[in-house]
Amino acid sequence: MVPDEMQAAVLTGFGGPEVLEVRSVPVPRPGDGEVLVRVAAAALNNTDIWTRQGAYGLPGDPDARAGWRGPVDFPRIQGGDIAGEVVAVGGGVDPARVGRRVLVDPAFYDGPGPDARPVGLLGSEADGGFAGYAVAADERAHDVTDSPLTDDELAALPVAYGTAAGMLARGGIAGGETVLVTGASGGVGLAAVQLAAARGARVVAITAAGKEEAVREGGAAEVVLRDRDPAAVADAVGRVAGRPLDAVVDVVGGPLLPALLDRVRDGGRWVIAGAIGGARVDLDLRRLYLHNVALVGSSMHTPAHFAELVADAVAGRVRPRIAGRRPLSAIHEAQEEFARAEHVGKIVVHPG
Image (cartoon, rainbow, N blue to C red; front, side, top):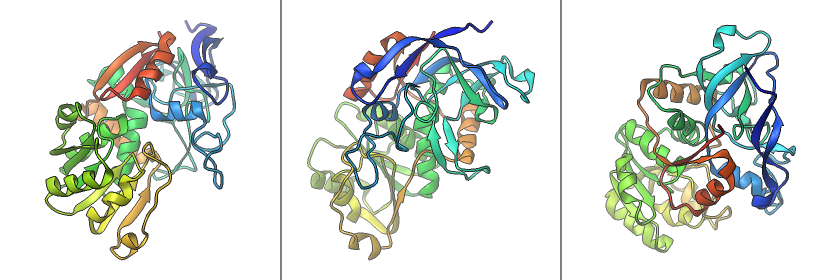
């Protein structure tokens, strides 16, 4: 039986840890075309921290407090990654869905079709998975009952691996190419290493000292330490790559972008989906157009990208690395651990 109340991590505004409150709230009810999911596991992402801080800025005001799509309607339950079980359905949904294990696509799209673009995210534009229960559109709750992955491993997939899958697709990453992945020990970075290597690319990864072995286990052929100035990192990348890069999968941004751009071959691609190293850069545009280098912005994934990721999960072709587990009551400690960036892989929260 579904209870009337549940515990949830509720964001009350932009700010520090104090604006995230764990408290009792009503269990949501599924509407037409929706399912109610009992959340078994939910993973942390940069989007949780940046949304809480309001760190996304606005056009013309990069320092403005805003969510990734602008305003956030508070209070908001955080958490974009949801793995769990369907326990109730709304109107028009097959009752046989109840009892099925599901992985929720956290994105809201700008239209129908497999190539629609994301314009919203659970935990930001709608309530997410840091709670005992969450509502999702029926078509976004993908059946993974037959997956060999654990609930924790499934919960690690949606935002990080979905974002990485979108980057590889938009960047046209192919087998036989030499691909650089920045921030390779983080959630999206390690996902990109694993997925690019699975596609047959030769991966050169940039990571922090002490994390090299984990990144190599993820599929990196070569590892470069980021603990030096950008020019030195660029020189090291050039040496170990042994040839110009076909593509860069970048979740860091900042001064590494202009420092490494000359290492990309004519006609190469630079795909970026993050700015943890700095949102603004001093870039010589001639290095782009004179060498026909494509600079591609990539935000999350399309429905088609996510469906491919679900197929990988059901077949057991991808296995996320779990760095830690916390109860929902320790969400603040979990976010602090995440922000320290000393881990490799994903930190998972258990609402139960």
